[in-house]
Length: 167
Image 1 (tube, rainbow, N blue to C red):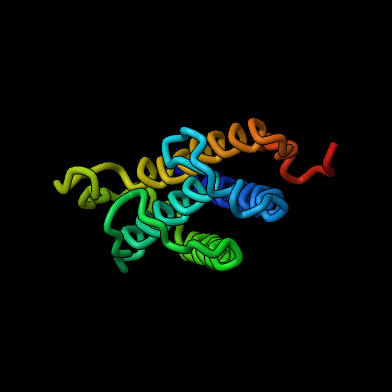
Image 2 (cartoon, one colour; image 1 turned 90 degrees about the vertical axis):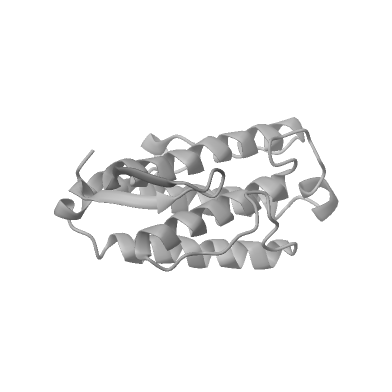
């Protein structure tokens, strides 16, 4: 996993999926998007907020510019349009930051303090970066389930279809 092309592809996939899912969520009434459906972060809106918060936490750790949050379920933006705008900004920052890295950067040891259990952790940098993208995929999977349960179609989500026309 010490190949930057892998992470750039995952970043591109992340951005593609975020745009697709936000486009679908934009068609959903706010009260439905914010309804507690029993998911880990309660609602579609809560899940989208968590994803943005976690991405900002990780990007802050990676860039040395920490992002302050009070909890992992903190609502960053209650307004959906604002949340989407900030999502796009964060996705662009992630892409731009990845463009500053080289394959050799991936081999470094990475240290950070966990928000859940505030102790210092140490892992290979590439492993933390892989976790960041895996985390996004995990929670987007929860979001697509919530969409399906409320009668909305997320469309094709397969990485293989990222650069292909919709089926």
